[in-house]
Length: 274
Image (cartoon, rainbow, N blue to C red):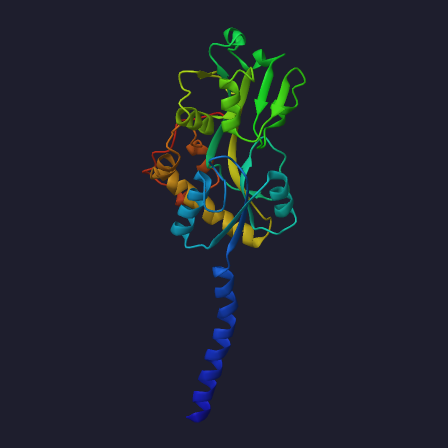
């Protein structure tokens, strides 16, 4: 009896020893770095993207450890393996070796201008920026914008600085991300002073990059499902407060297994950005 009891105890200890590393691996925190983006990711505790990740952590039970760094440092830190994920990567940028998630946000780069400025009469399309003094914020813009040689660009610290410079006639126009531009314009009381062209200079989908390893594969699958569910149940729309920044439903569903797709998904209006 004692010999049998000892064998049972040894087997239990062995099984526990095998299970513990696995449990630790499952509960290991997911380290996420995001580039600084006004309103969206201003600090590890402030921003609309930060709130989205906090909601995903609640839904999935994962422990997210988030940092916000200047864009170049954030990319370098992810590429060097310091982080498990890069939390906000626009689709028109060159991808490092990684696994891309489904998109969770649509980013429209819009042209804002002061409506009573002489140059305003001819501003109806992005091509009309040629020869003008145009402001850009501190965050990343796609090369289709920054490579234009026919525009006199000026970099400033923030979107708020851009809108104030427009109001005081220090710029002909400014290129600002839609969500931030409209939000700050209303907040500053400049809605009657500053107008916007309806045609976006560039539109990108924003997604998360995961490391190209087994952990990255698992984290991406969990993340994709959570974002899909949040789009379907209206959480993303509520979080961002706008329908026009939501990704297209079909872009999310094409990366999901058939058994994970929902029949009750409201989704979003189609867009043409890949």
